[in-house]
Length: 113
Figure (tube, rainbow, N blue to C red):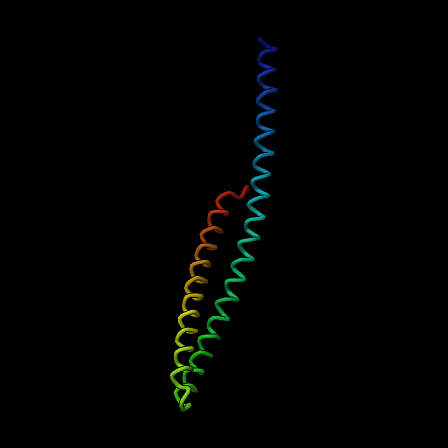
């Protein structure tokens, strides 16, 4: 009976050791994911800033296009297309930022203390 208890204790210790190793691997993966999410969020912020500048530039181009003569319609059409693309990029960047925040929150749930 003592031998059986010792065997079970040893088996339990081994299971705990494997569980510890698994949690350490999970923790390392979570840290890597956190770094990646942080990098993605930084990239998204750069895209958002660039998109904001692009919108301002598109507005300037639109003003110049209206002041020009025969090519006003062509420039205006191009400006509208660029503006639509900029808005799509901004919407995508915002959605990606939200996803990054959600992932970061999920990753935070798995951190070991």
